[in-house]
Length: 178
Image (cartoon, rainbow, N blue to C red):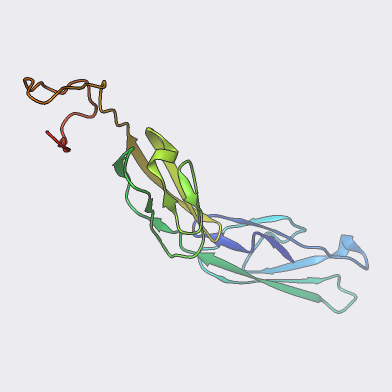
C-alpha cells in the first residue's frame, strides 16, 4: 500500500493506492479496514484520527495477501494573529505552534525562524504562511509606508515652522533643535 501523503492535516485527505499482482485478478476480493471501497484503488481516504489502513486481498484459491500502512493525522498549526507595523520597524520573528517547520512569504528573511523584515517586504499587506507537517496557517502583516515629508532646512535664530507632508500622521518628532 502507498499513501500520498502518509501524514495529513486534520480535515484533509490522502490518496491510497494498492498494487496487487498474481493469479486471476477478476477473482480478487478486497477487504479494507477501516471500510474503504472494496475494489482496486486509488482511494481518497479522509481519516479523523491517526491509524492503520489494512488491505487483505484473496482470490479464493491462494493464500490471502495482506498489507498495511500507518496514516498520521496532525492538528493544523496556529500562527500569531495578524499584525500591523511601520515600514521602518526592525525585523521580528513571527511565531506559531507547534514549532519546528518553516515560513514562506514576502518579507521572510529566515524561513526557519520566521524572521520578517518590514523594509524588505515593503508597504502593503503581506500573506506570510507557516508550514507544519503538510498543514499551514496564515498571518497577514500590514506594513504601513513611512514618509517624513519634503526636506526642510532652517538656520539657528530663524522663526520656528510647522513640519508638513509626512505620513502616517501622528508620531513624535525628535532630534537636535526640535
